[in-house]
Each structure stands twice: as C-alpha cells, then as structure tokens.
Image 1 (cartoon, rainbow, N blue to C red):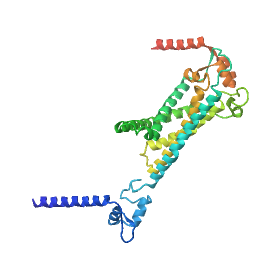
Image 2: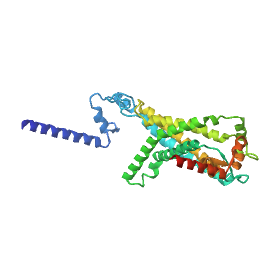
Image 3: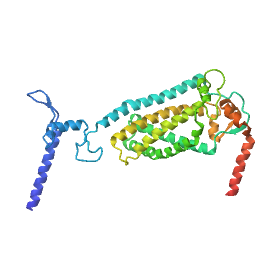
Image 4: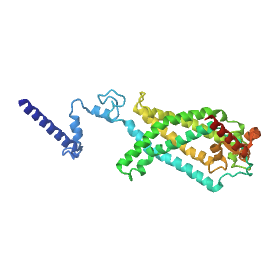
Length: 353
C-alpha cells in the first residue's frame, strides 16, 4: 500500500510538471523590463536543459547533422534546411514554370490551328494502302501512350490538385483521391519504363539525322515556301520528337525510379533533387507531347489512321514521306486486298482454335 501511495505521488508530480511545461510552451513572448527585448519562454526553458548550448541551437537551425541521437541518414538532423529549399524550388519555380510551359504549348498550337488550320491531303485518296506501322509498332506505341497519359494526369494531380480540388472536396474524399493518384503513379512508373526501353530499341535505327532532314528543317516542315519538303520513313520533326522522348523520357524514368525505391541507400537530399529533376523533365515532356498529339490527330489529315490501322493511303505517303513512298510503292495493296488479308487471318485463327 505504501508503494502504491508512493507511485501515485510520483505520478501526480510528473503530471504537474508536464502541465507546467505545457503552460511555459504556450506563453506568449513578453518584454523584459530592463532591456526592452522580447523574451521567448520556450527558448529559455529549452536552453536550461542539460547539454543545450547556443552552439547547439546554431547547429540545429543550420541543419547540421548529429543534432539528434539517431544514426540513421536524415534522422540525425533535427531541422533539414534542404527541405525548405526544395519546397521553395517546387512551389515558386517548378509549379509556375510547368503551368507556363503547358499553357504556352497549348496556346501556340491553338493559334497555329486558327491561322493555318489542319494539313489536308493535296490529292484525292487512291484507295491503295501501304503498311506504315506493324502490329508490334502499334502495340508498343499505344502501350507507352496510354501509360504516359495516366502518369501525366496523376502527376499533375500530385503537383497542382491541392490548389483547386482540396478546397472543394471533403477531407476523406480528398485523402482517398490523392492516395490513389500517388499509388497509381508509383506502380505504373516502372511499367512505363519497360515500354519506353522497348520503343527506343525498336525505332532507334530509323532516327539518325541526315541531309534530307536539314532540308526539312529549312522549310519548316512545309510551312516555309511552297510544296512539302522531301522526307524518308521519318521526317525531321518525328526524329526530334523521338530524341526528346528518349533523352528526357529516360531522365524522367531514372529520377522516378530513384524516388520510387527509397530502399537503396539514397538519402533525403538525393530524393529531393531527383524529385525536382523528375518534375521538370515530366513537364517538358508533357508540353512537347501536345505538338506530337496535335500533328498525329487533328493537325494532319490521314496521320491518325496510320497508327490506328497500320496502313496509310498512297496520297498521304507521297505527300508527307515521298522518299519512303518511292521505296515501297510497289507494296501498295487495294482496300479489298487488305480486307481479304484480314479475313484470311481471321479464318486461319479460327481453324487453329
């Protein structure tokens, strides 16, 4: 019973001490009557603790490691100065810069469409088709494109949604939405990396620049002067897009994987740097992709059907890739022959099954 009373007394003393400490921490700053300078009650209390000196506080505020008893990377620093620097770069430079890049790209394409309109076929369709993209080409393209769109959307939500969605969504829905966006982005990133590598390996042999591309650039892809500039299997603009996707895409993938797998020894500073690189690269890639999407859909008559079906009309091939057309024009087939090929493939598959 005495032990119980003693323990009860110790417990009450501890609670009283905690309450007094809480009161001290909640006190506002007051003026010292002698010097007239404000006195921070919390700092005065903390500075009375054993081993806490002005040098220690300078180390804490300067982000010096070793200000905690932990030996884990990042956890041995009480205040991470780099974290505030990262937040400044993200909120004051990357986020506004991304909006400028995306908005500027979309506005430029809209202005171009209003001034020049889509590129129409100069001659009527012949009805004869040339295979431009194999089934493997189209599979890789749509695999990468689909993941790119999903990753782009979720990434933009992680970067910007707090400004326009958080104020209007209930807390629980907002938390669930952002958690889903983060998990989708993290888990699909490595799958996108595999598709990007497959695309690079499949198409790199077609994307070496040559003198024909210089002439294509000199005529602005057909905007400057009269007539469409000559082009082989891929024109200069398509090659530029390939190398943007390759170089910037690999940068985004590598930085994303570093952030996606934080269990390989990289510290917080490394993670923060790679997140900035990842964000900048991804925004550049998305802004550039607007041009690719526009040219491949509404901007050029007949371009989308090539990636949709694998085949293009002779008139389209002759107008946009005349050198390639001359090399493969003897392989052109009529629409009826193309349908017969598809029917024959279906029949053989049916018989095999």
